[in-house]
Image (tube, chains in turn green, red, blue):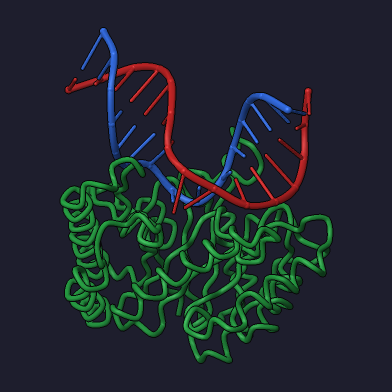
Length: 290
DNA sequence: TTGGGTCAAGGAGTC
DNA sequence: GACTCCTTGACCCAA
């Protein structure tokens, strides 16, 4: 069986889990509280809407609690939002919706700059704390490997060594291939070094295949989920023909989905659809779904 | 209310 | 060396 989902916001409702603010506004604790509350409410709204339509995956926006890992964050967020997060986690479990988060390009735990590496670990611990409070053990924190810095083996070693002591983070972490630097074969190698799974992104793979077909790439990535005993996750998107290579299209081309489905060969998978059209792009799976 | 400038952060590629 | 792009656009201010 294939399950599917989308990231961060719902254009139909509309609702988002990603409302944020500027650093300069962080001093206003009441404003931050109100904004976090809106994001949490958005998550509840989206979860219920998704479940009614059989959508079993959702990626929470990284800004659910904006600046949560920043030293200037004005209050004890796990204490103040813990009850709401536990409620939402229980709701997601009862609705059978699997959750994820995806820290952005600034999160580089393997950076040669110690300060960058430290801040990156803080951000990963924030995502870990969110899922620990929610109690969703099958949640996933998706991360790219970061820069190569002119020495690929050294970059991978730094990344693995930085994360190896982070046992809590590793319970949720999964590594994703990217379109320029790290091919799926290298990602799987690093992931296996940490005992964590790998996520294959079809569009990144098309731009950075390392000589592997889509089917061969899936053969490498999908078995990495066996150690955790969870359903494999993959990312699916289509190229926007009017933009730079790698730019996500508004929807998923039926041809891209057909190719992906054939490469999967009937294997159980959770498919995160990365499209500008968010939930609207899920109609590729079931016309009229949304 | 709207349009345009701006926003914490890393790294790679282009010119 | 400056600029651009990436995730997930959203905030904020001037008019």
